[in-house]
Image 1 (cartoon, rainbow, N blue to C red):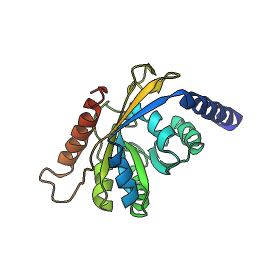
Image 2: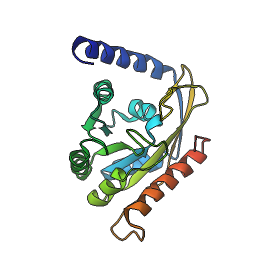
Image 3: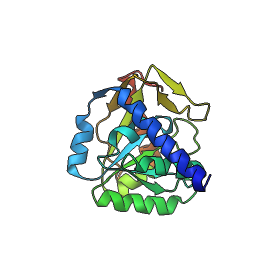
Image 4: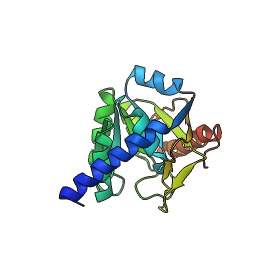
Length: 211
């Protein structure tokens, strides 16, 4: 999608999300973990790909950087996100990963929060790629997990079961305590990935989110 079709889709997407988000009722759980990390400097905001929409709307103006794939869908998401204050860092584990990791580490060292969908862009769902842990280790910043639970939502028929809360939905947003990754981890980067997955499951269990 390019040209006027892309511009139209971006405008429609921004308008749809803006109006829809005005109707949502948000309930935050353990948000102090997020606020404390933001006050201290850079950190990685780790989340599942299917739950990306709500953090984009809620935290975009903080401001928030986000790793977004270099696909055509990624371009649409990047431009829609710009309307909410999101700065896209283009790349993924399958394409442009090294450049994206370098840009992410630089942003973290400069004190920015960077959102990473740890099972994106292609899954499998609820698996963890090493980008978040690598960036945390190289930039010496914590990882903050975030989970979303919405009883009333549309689910896309995609691999990630992408979640779109319906109008006037009650949305629970749960944050986990900071997780730090160091060179001294006894199980290396694979062990750090397992820790990230466990932290996301624990944050989700508090609000009844998907596994």
